[in-house]
Image (cartoon, rainbow, N blue to C red; front, side, top):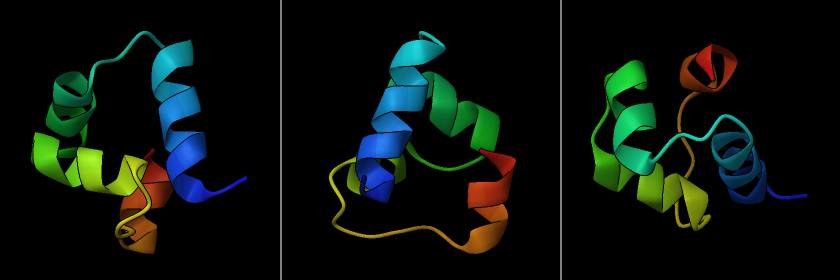
Length: 50
C-alpha cells in the first residue's frame, strides 16, 4: 500500500475531510491533497503525527 492510499484510508476511517486533517497537522489542504495522490510525501515528523 502506498502512503497516499494509507492517508486516504485513515481519513475515511476517522471521517476527516482534507481540510480538517490539514488543520490538525498545521499544513494546507493542498498539501494533504498532494500526499493523498502520491505526488509528494511529507517529512517523517508529520507522518508520525498522523
